[in-house]
Length: 293
Image 1 (cartoon, one colour):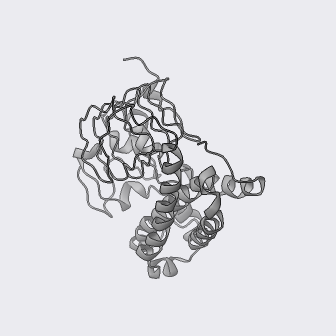
Image 2: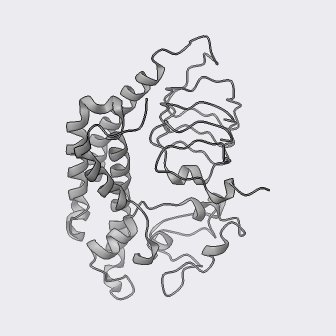
Image 3: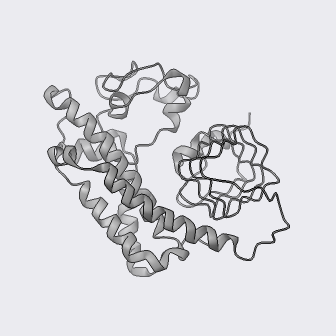
C-alpha cells in the first residue's frame, strides 16, 4: 500500500488544500498563545486559562522565547501545530483586524480559532485519505466532505459560532473510519501470521512504556492509543491507524511509518527518532532527531 493520488485530476485540489494547512505565525495574532488552555505539566511555560495571554506573548504577537523552546524544555510549544487555522481566522475570518485593535471581538475570535482548528484538522485527514490507493472506491464521498469542510472555513464569525461542529465532525469521523478499515485491510493482506506478536491491539489502548519491538503492528488500529515512552524501534507501522495517538517520548528510531495513516507533524515532534525513521509525506524529521546528544 502506498500513498498516492487516485488520478491526476485530484492533484491540484489536494495540493491546494494542503498549502493552506501550513501554519504561518507571521500572519497570525498569537491566537494559540491566548485562545488555548495549557499547563506547565504538558510542556508549556505555565498553567493558564483559555483567553489569558501566555507570559511570553509580546505586543507584536511574537513569542519571546521561540528560538529557545527546547532549551526551556517547552515541548508542548515546540510540538503544537494549528494547521494554518491561526492565520485563517486572523486574515480571512476577521479580515486582518486583531483582538487588541478590536477588544470587543476577542472572545469571538478565540472561539472561532478553536472551531477553525477542528475544521483544518479534518481537512488534513480528508486530503490524506484522498491520496491513498485503497480509498478509491469512496473518493467521491471523501471529495464531497472535503469540499464541504473547506466551504465552512469561509464562514463569517457569526456563522461559525452557529455551526454544529460536533455533527460535522461525526460525519467526517465516519469517513475516516471507512478509510482506516480499507487501508488496514490492504496492509494485512498477505501477511505472514506467524511473524510478530499475535496480541490484538484496540482503539484507545494503554501502551505507555510498552516494549513493542516484537509486536505485529502492520495494519493495526491504534487510534487514540497511549504510546507515551513506548519502544517502537524498528517496528513496521505500514497501514497502521495513528489518529490521535499520544507519541510523547515514544522511541521511533528505525521504525517505518512511511505508510502509516493519520499521523501529524505535531505527533512526530514529541516522539524520539533518528535519520533512519521513515515518515509519510509530507512530514519531516524534527531537527532534534538529527542532532547527536
